[in-house]
Image (cartoon, rainbow over all chains, first blue to last red):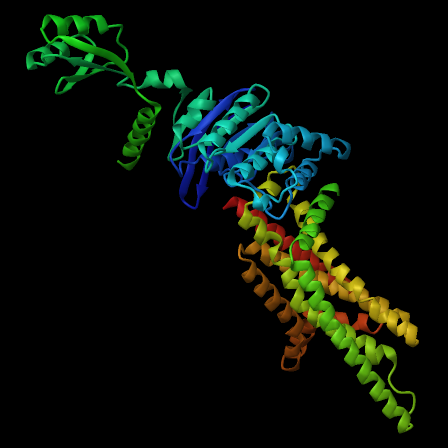
Length: 312
Length: 254
């Protein structure tokens, strides 16, 4: 549905995005993850035809973004970072305007607006001025605008920014319910955002893709993949040294009775051997648990590694 | 065509959901009414003098009322048009709604024509209300119809030039005040450019005279439609809209 190859965008001499390559297939929900200024919005603006790229090719719904911008725009719904709403318009009139802008036939407009208002939960505010609505409702109006022409592809730039937790959950549920029928790209610099809604994650930093995978595999990819924590009765230097000798253990750090054991990601199951070793060394195991590395850590690791290389 | 109308309709409605249209129209009518009243008054006093002194027929309604009235109207519109055009693109950029326009399946030319049309419609509404002055003249006197019709036509063309300038500066700046001020200054410049003809050499004075907006309006005021003037106005509008297109397109490339 979306193909991007060798896409670059220069602002003056500064590259906002640099040689991006990725594909999104039909019905997929893909998350763009990256710190602020990583090039997420720029990529999205290129995909929507708002902005041309400096180099490379991108096609959406089978149309090249540069050669057939009108066809691309017809098949894309776009929610920019700031919802593009007119404060002096009533919700219904605004949706009527966006429906007309997308050339929905006049006799189908009312029906289209009605169904989108139901879908986005705007029923109670449909006759109110957009300028008087809360940020959450305004965001939904923006989303309704992006969905009004039932596009194949939805591009959402930070769809939940500035919303309260309840609204965030509602918008996430809405986005999830749209997957399958629509192909969705959404961007965020907040991790739970993408883990909650996306099937696949593309991590961007400084205009480059630093990782692209499903959430599970991204976790696995991490070098320091697994961490076990163990609480013991009698910690001893001897015992800790013995644990470090277990094959697959990369590092053991002790803070009082609590030991943190780092495991090489390629290792087979070795928990039984670790516990056994601890018991034979007389440390007395009280508690043993596996700690999953959060996506935050993966993210930080990926982005800081990359920036270190780029700076060198 | 439908896209142009969609945009024009929304912008036209916005004039009336905000105070702009009411303020501009009310201001325009107040000033014009004042001017019409004193034109009329002056005209009667002058003609009375002619009659008392038996100096002949006196000034015609066309020369005594219509021409000064439209001359004044064109100056007033020079002041008011910037208020009409300044928000057209500047506001869209500020609200980020420009992204909605630019990512909808419409061309940039359609967007610009739509905006131009909405502003032109507001100007036409303003002019429509001024029809009351000729009606009063027809009820009480016997004015010539021709110069009135051509004066309206000339005023619409002249205003369209102001609008094209206004659209250009609105596209250029995100700040409405800046856009409005530049529109006014540029409109005034093209208005007064003919003043320089007095001191310029023979070739330059011709060129400057041809560039002057008001010089091309004068024929319309006398009831003459000259193809040179029409062509001048249309190309002025065309260049203005073309430059607007270039400016907006270039924003995408930056």
